[in-house]
Length: 420
Ligand code: SF4
Ligand code: SF4
Image 1: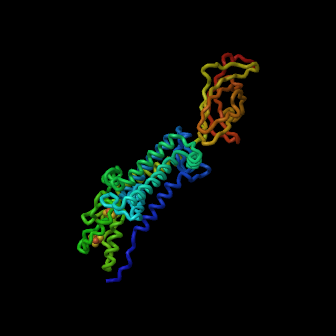
Image 2: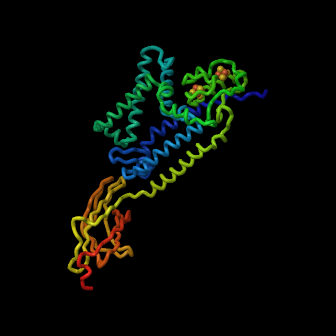
Image 3: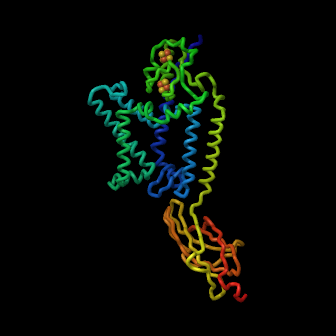
């Protein structure tokens, strides 16, 4: 028999991945692109900041598309990789691992989900849980309130009571989780685990001990002792398994002493169905939905208008002729600043052929704050003797044309009798 190589363990990779995910979650609210948050549901402006883009209430359909995309990606990943998310990336697992690591560092033992050891050690452990819970609570609030503003206002005592309340309530819940519930969340409460039963496919990635390896098992029980979910994987794959790989590491270490390879394997399907069995109508349909929604979302986000202009001929002021025989048409307009910066807008008008038209009223230097709407009124002067289509343009302070809208101008009563 060839000399087996030293056991390759998954634990360092799992921890690295967990830390990477946690750091991303922690640091994302501080990240910015083009001066805008990478991800924040901004409470002040009621807008979603996403990768440098700002989606307002008017773009609610895009937010719904983004949410739907997220759900479908999650379903697809679960169907292919099982509960890998739970064991390798879920913040709940990472926090529980951290809480257990801290408890062990203090010399405490964890039996039946309870801390065992001297009281002062338990008090220290709970102090650590409380600090971690405060950090997690603040991190959640940072996805709704600018973290720099949060910290500045916290330092000066000016933090909004709503933000303080959300922070503390979240921190209390996280503390209860770290201090008392821990793995029970994954085992008994988390709805994702239940979904997984429905989503599992013949070829879903699972960790198991193949039946063909059972004769080599020395029944040491190491795989059972390390399982955070209390599973005996020797009895076969179970839905509570979070694919963390601890049993695989434990078995590899035990069998290495006997100069044999470990018995546990990750495979697509417990019966060796292989990854090819994942190429089925369910996964193909979900993949298609992901591609479609990603395209729609990208097109929707990058073709979004920074402002909107809605124009209507006034119902309260009838059009009439001026002394030079031109038709005066009264308009009401509504401008909305959909950007996250304030702007100064101008409205101009022209014929569809591009000839400029005179416009009078509130059409220049219309100052709007982010998300602000404003109604303005103005008069358009046309040499029209007949029904004419005109175009109204909205430009920002740099003269960049943002949107335009066509409108029909009818000749004023008596316009047809005016001298040429
Ligand atoms: S059975 Fe193995 S992979 Fe599954 S949860 Fe337990 S230790 Fe982790
Ligand atoms: S760790 Fe490996 S050898 Fe030991 S009981 Fe589990 S499967 Fe058997």
